[in-house]
Amino acid sequence: MTINIGETVFFDAVRFCRIGAAIVVLAVAGCSSTNTSGPVPMAEDAGPKDTGTFPNLNIPPQVAAKQLTADESKAKLAELKAAKNAQGAKRGGVPGSQAALTDLAKQHGPQTLKQIEGKCDPALDPTCK
Image (cartoon, rainbow, N blue to C red; front, top):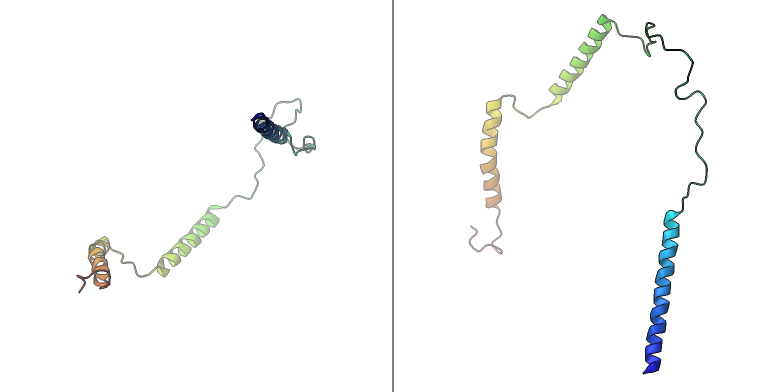
């Protein structure tokens, strides 16, 4: 009887030591970092600089791109509208009026139900005609 108790205590102690060692290893792995390099240096000309003077807001900023004239903007707008109309003309099969769409919606449900009910399996449904 004493031998059995000693074996149980010994094996339980080994199990607890293994669990404790696994927890310690996981904790150390979780705290470690894979980033071994230091902070990444910024370029010298990046970011704000202290020039020692206040900015002059009376000087207009330089534009990034040439601005469109009124004629150019009208031409681009006409080109976009033409492309929009060309895409709309390619659509087909959809009636244009609201009344036609309403009629289609009223008929679609009963037609689909008739198609579903018309297909039945006599093996599954003995009342099927």
